[in-house]
Length: 266
Image (cartoon, rainbow, N blue to C red):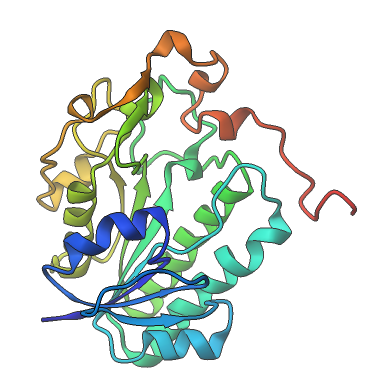
């Protein structure tokens, strides 16, 4: 059984995925904060912005699923530097040093969040981030591409739509992914022989789908779950959501005020 490192293992997506991935991989899990683990997981805690810790975390694994990062529309550039820039570079360097051949990077639809919501989004459209968070994901994708082409690290860049356990509103219904379908994309990234450096969208079957996921399907991705079957009890329809937030792929990330890059006091 292959051993993989999961970063951000204590976060929402990490907690969603670990029970599924445990069935297929031996898990080494890490987060910057305390988190609950099971007896069959190798657990370490530390900051991926620390190069020595990152080397320690990446040692003796067959692949990495990088979920860790600072998420939200209100964070400035300075706040994202360590968790979203240095951390991904450290991981890629550790992959190079330790000959880790596979890395799955949890990117986001916020890397293209300023596209209009009526756009059928696919991997060949230009990067248009909606926030400093989205900008950091664009950087992460570029860094993965550089290491893939220079050093042969096979990378799968998952632009995740929404991975909440249930679908809470009509915008997210167009881009939602179940844990099972997200895990199947991770399997492709870790196992498929033709993966080099691939951008795919992580979404289940969705009505009026925001993403054209032809590239993922070319690797055999076949989502099993449907957003319409997974509505939250408090699901909000389109007419219950602010119109401006429905106008962009990135939703409220795209319409919130962009913070000062260096913080309010700069």
